[in-house]
Image 1 (cartoon, rainbow, N blue to C red):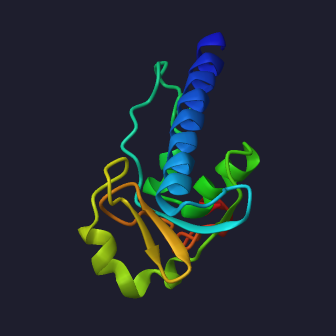
Image 2 (cartoon, rainbow, N blue to C red):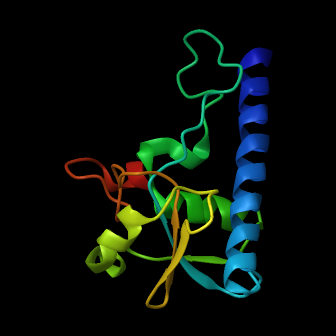
Length: 146
């Protein structure tokens, strides 16, 4: 039992560090304060290995930032709850028309991975849109993708 909760603790600390670095890069790149609301869409998922994963541990030690292979709403909620930034989750539909620019951008933390599309900040965390681009996975319980 201790190993399970320790794995989760370490995974949370890693997520917090990565989310803080992402928020810092957004603030620096766009010269904005993340104390004020900023509309953000997180595209793709970071490739994060599980930390100290005990055998048969299901989700213990898994990164919250890459569940569903990308869930922008979940990442935004994590950053808001942890008081890392004041993120307003942007819907996938608001960036869909500019996907060519997103696909052409490098993956975070490389320079150029943070884009401004209209009034939405896009942070490219991975190469492909994930299972829950609008916060809802098709044919499943919508709460799964929150």
